[in-house]
Image 1 (tube, rainbow, N blue to C red):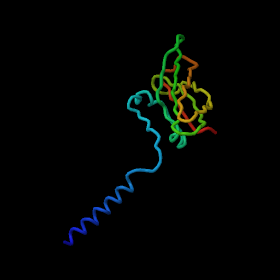
Image 2 (image 1 turned 60 degrees about the vertical axis):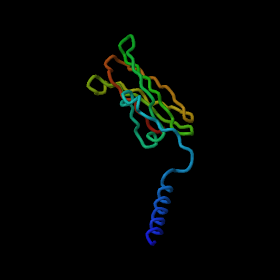
Image 3 (image 1 turned 45 degrees about the vertical axis):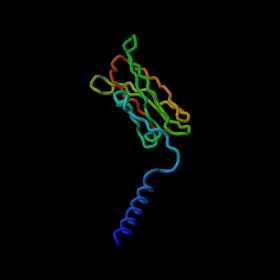
Amino acid sequence: MTTKPVALLVSAVVLSLGAGCATEPGPHAPLDTTKFTLENTDRFVLLDKPAQYSVTCTGLQERPLADGRLEVTANVKNREARRIQVQINCVFKDDQGFSTGDETPWQTLILSENSTEAVRFTAMNTQARKYTVRVRQAR
């Protein structure tokens, strides 16, 4: 007879602890996934914690222009439900991953709530084969 109340007490404690840790209150924003864009987003770098929390890349496209220069388009998404301001640039690299000395100036990008913007970069010379798109909090 004494095992039944103890079992009930233990199960009540386990249930109450489990229920308190199961969910967080409030609405949840959808989580971004790299399931389909992992190959394209390895050249996208977030330089600080605020940018890591607020921004993601939903895709990168690259294409050679008729004159041999490289053009890159980055789809940058605001993950927050508020307007944010970030800075973005692109460093163009040669076949081995070394900078060609061609780095675009930092430009300010204002992203509305949960919006995605396409940002285009063009290399100044024909040496560019690889690139890194960098994003940081606006200064």
